[in-house]
Image (cartoon, rainbow, N blue to C red; front, side):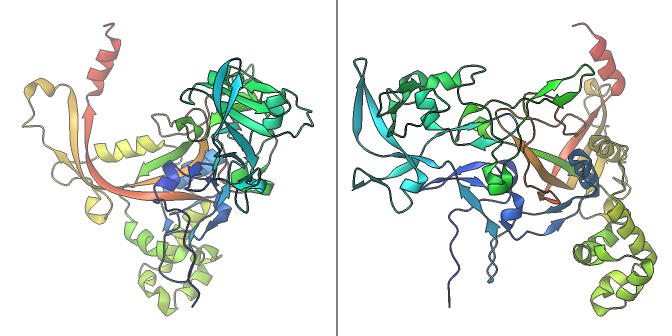
Length: 450
């Protein structure tokens, strides 16, 4: 019996949303990789339903519909689930013990090697050596990512034809860019610090490379500016590449959006429908057709709700209707504020994912009573988190209303795939405490000059 291939590394499902999603660079023992786009993921996890989040994400991405799936998990059967990755960067440093003298100073030096030179084992001057990925790459504020053209950099010439052996000279701890040089056997030598200067253009114009999306991932790269109406618009000029340390904290910022699942009068119906909807009942075109489908034995658990109610829910899912006129946080606040001491939330007992109870303020210290309107003990809640993209160099964080928009021209969202019809998501179960402050007291405080 042929054994299943072992993965090169393992990641938790949550890590694939927050730290190592598509477009992120990950160090492995022998090389560095970039996590592939969603179309290269092998299999999907369980579908995750959360209508309010689905509607918000579809609006942000400008699509008609979107689905959520948990990242693929390890299985014990013959199916191979997992996440593919591509080797990146494709330049390596040979681990040789050499020194180089320049201007009276001694530098440790290592040869720069292309991946093609080490595929069958790294060799240098006829001897087998170890090679490690170079730690410097280039990227732009659109999330694009590429290898540095080390020949161009060393020769300070975008049209150079020299292909002499390249070396990386380092002095001190290796963290001072003023002490790191790229050198060619032809005699050219250039400090890496030039690529770190503000608004530096020494790495050239971005070519729109997206190695996590494979050979078809390259796109046009445009820089953006603010027009006279205050809108962020693309220009006809490309961005310039910036130096990026691939393991640095600013190499990847996941963009996620989350909502708390709130009580729903039709929660039981939706829970059962979730089992049959994806790839099955979502293709039903008429209520009459659905009635015939529900006669089959496998739908017995669902059929008890009646064709009319089921069809209404299917139509609602297809249309993406919901509380689209309210922000995510507004709906959540309304749910928490509607709790009462006796009953909790009106629909808590009907929902397995949400149970919140209003705590009496009778025992509260009198000095706090004017400032606190309500304290809600949330005994049970479910949070759904979905990744919609990522940025490089700096994070783009959702505002207080739970929206996620590119309001800064400094960075823009990188895509998770060429065509996005589903996104990775996870569910978190937990509990907490909600404290509502007195609105009048907050307003009075805001007006106080002190």
